[in-house]
Image (cartoon, rainbow, N blue to C red; front, side):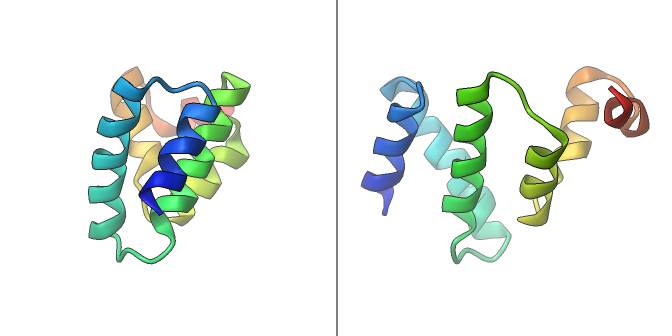
Length: 88
């Protein structure tokens, strides 16, 4: 599965130097969230965001459905309240 996921990530524009840390980071997160197909769901959505060069509300909902606290992470990174980010 990791070979397929890394091939997919390279196919959507991530360099090999980016792929390995992404697999580690999101693999750890997926395992903490219960494993299963979460890693492939997370990476597919991250790949969609990368391909489109933007994250839509639907992307965020899909990622949040995996259990990732994506709205909290984005709010922290942008230093804005979640309500403001959702309006943008």
